[in-house]
Length: 324
Ligand SMILES: [Zn+2]
Image (cartoon, rainbow, N blue to C red; front, side):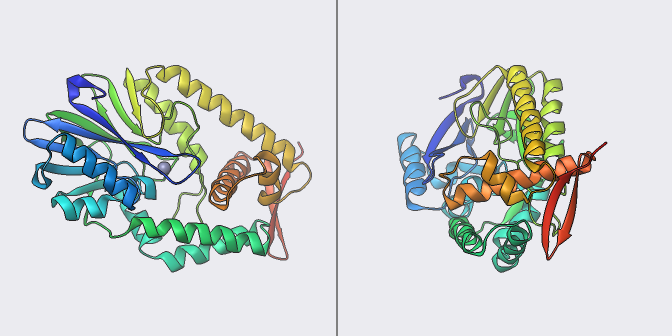
């Protein structure tokens, strides 16, 4: 039990990455159980859920609803299995439901679009191939797909015996949502607000994806300030109550990173060159994908701010500083 007044349990599930776990949550109410986030669809996750269900004598039909904060495989992936197991509805924000269709259910389209985006941004052929391979690998962990029920920003949902507001917090994904219990000031923060690592902010290929995700993220973390939130239950790391302090740290982190990238760009560099300078050298292809998308999110943000410009030559995009 991680927060007794609301009946919230943490279900920590393993991930096969450097970031080695995801915290899902299970909420006990008088009429049954509700789950928040699902984990990757793989044996170790299912094992983890089965163990939790056994410990708490939860039968499949005790599970009344499954809420997903965002479409990433480590949150959404196992929701199809959980729905098959329980028959419960799976809820996700309406924007990320669209991303499930665009990305996970249209795998070839998104892999092709990513391939083009990496090449256009200066990534060498061999590395593009490996990186695309790692995305392809990850998509395996998202099926079977559940039937989704979509949620709108501001909607109120019942989880356990209490009401939560659906808070749209775009940035980490275009349609990321948090669940907020106003009475207790408790925020199920998903990947929007994490205690130790900064949420990855990824630019996706421009086939319907938001063109400036970092802008959205900075706006969305600022908006958390007005909630008067007392406790955040994040999807990675431990619960924390230093919300205001954490928001300020994240803002400072991104400002510093923007400055660093702007300096890296200098009189001309591709996103791939900037990525190689800013991030550690021993990244797996899985991590390189995040690093590259994060670099692009920052460079695009600076471009919107009028601090960088992008020029295309022989199909390759080069960023450079705009001199005042
Ligand atoms: Zn995520």
